[in-house]
Amino acid sequence: MDTNFNDLGLSEELLTGIQKLGFEKPSPIQAKTIPLALTGVDLLGLSQTGSGKTAAFALPLLQSLDLSSKLVQGIVLCPTRELAVQVSEEIQRLASGMEGFYTVAIYGGAPMDRQVRSLKKGVQVVVGTPGRIIDHMKRKTLKLDSVQVAILDEADRMLDMGFRDEMEFILDSLPVDRQTLFFSATMNKGVNGMIKSFSRDAEVVNIKSSTLTVESIDQTYYEVRNRSKIEVLSRLLDMEFNSKGIIFCNTKQMVEEVCEVLTMRGYLTDRIHGDITQTNRERVIKRFRDGKIELLVATDVAARGLDIDDIAVVFNYDLPYDPEDYVHRIGRTARAGRSGKSVTFVFGRDIHRLETIERYTKQPVKRMKIPSQEEVEGAKSDTLVSKVRDLLESGSYNTYDTAFDRLLSAGNNASEIFSALFHILNTQNNREFETITEDTETFVPNKKKRISNDNSYKGGRKRSRKRPFRRKDRDKKRNRK
Image 1 (cartoon, rainbow, N blue to C red):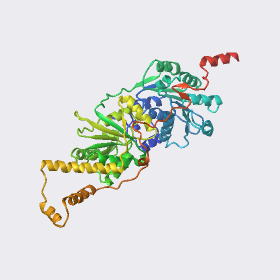
Image 2 (cartoon, rainbow, N blue to C red):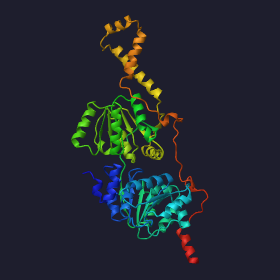
Image 3 (tube, rainbow, N blue to C red):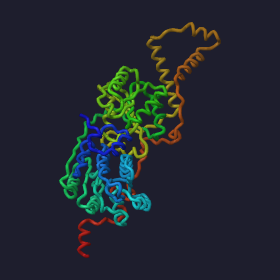
């Protein structure tokens, strides 16, 4: 039996935030972790990066807060500035139904005074990199005396980057009766040591990865802004794809919007998501199988169990949060020994998540140039010529000699007649192109626009900051006093 967010013991305010985001079902790590974390026990969540861990720890954390207080009650440690910002933003979105909630991301490379002002206003949750958190602790601009929940996101990665001393220093400074939640992709000696030292009989939740079968799929991606996605998708459909395809979106609202716009543009499109009744869902899938619609716009949950062999392409209109969802999505193509193709749209911080997916699948995703309007028109003409050539070779077409003779007798030659007919065919049901920002940008093949890590570090080592006190250093200081 599938688990719903309503089954996890979450408050109405949080369920409202989840509903606004359009999430339908909890991921495996969320379904197993949230009820445990709500009881107040320490725990270790073992799951791949991007498997929905943020909501798994953020929702119990949010439910534990006293919003009448502006003291810091929760702290989340992250290995990089990108992840700190991403986690802080997602926590804020999940808390959209909680009036009076505030969070801030603090990390190196950003102005210290701006972070100080945010902290002085009062926040309940701080998300940050270990080095910058210690900077604020030493300046006394961040006080952790009231922390009830401490979370280490990607604990194994922080240890690999050389943050052990900082992690120990921060955890050792927190109240003894706090709840500690560790999340990690792997269970190694370092993670095990941290758990033994800084938790109370932590419960272990282990989510195993699914088998990866993506070798036969041509995986590509396009860097495209949200406002340009529909136009780029339309160009790709016009240029390359004339068979069944699935377009995946992360939320029900986005499914509705994409389906509506594509239908208005003349594509044979329908959609399925969690609000579609089972009867209508079966009707849509039957039409898709029968070829009455060519494009199916869907959420992950709604498309589970969809078994259709002749899907040529899968579009990740929204990049999934979970690498396993990415594998499940693109696995809809390349069925029954066929080859397949996946196309993913990314922009900005999505690049970081895409690199995580590449590491998870151990397969490269090739960057592609967005086709221009001229390239699309040329490809459509080539397709039409190819269809005419195939008809001529097969001989399976009707003759229109009388109409052709009439046009010749009117003074037109064969070339002019062909050009006029070609023009009519090529412009039937033709849509107007939109000019997008990406049309004016220079394309550099295979170059990702990376966002740098915490500027205070290089290769996991600090550049100039003094090493923070270890516990034994602090004890020596106390003894001297």
